[in-house]
Length: 136
Image 1 (cartoon, rainbow, N blue to C red):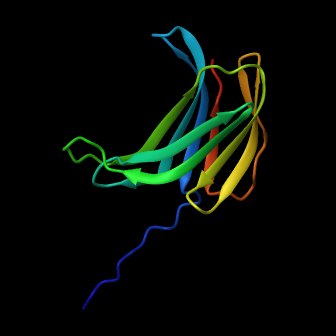
Image 2 (image 1 turned 45 degrees about the vertical axis):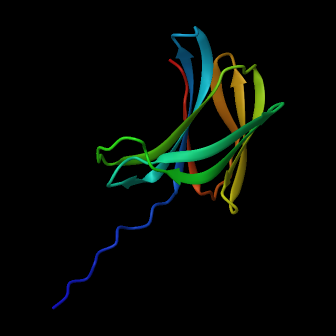
């Protein structure tokens, strides 16, 4: 008798976007970190998430293109990830646009004031979960 394969329940989001204010010890400058990662953990190794980024005035656009295999030979489980560091920011509002390859797209507003980050507007239904960390 064959047993049924049990599928894990589907994830609510495909990706997570972790936004945080950080400080670079080497260049001695503040920056805003945009860390993308998959909600799914891969069993073989942590893939590299390929993301194209573009900044035009106060709009930051990200396009998630797909995955590529890491260069190492060791097999270690993990999430696919990518980080973009935004150094030359000023106080004010930024429109953040995230697009999945040839499909869904979301826009939200990130406010930067007095060293604090705040999301002003966000889509309720989305393929990406947005997590915000403010510097202590």
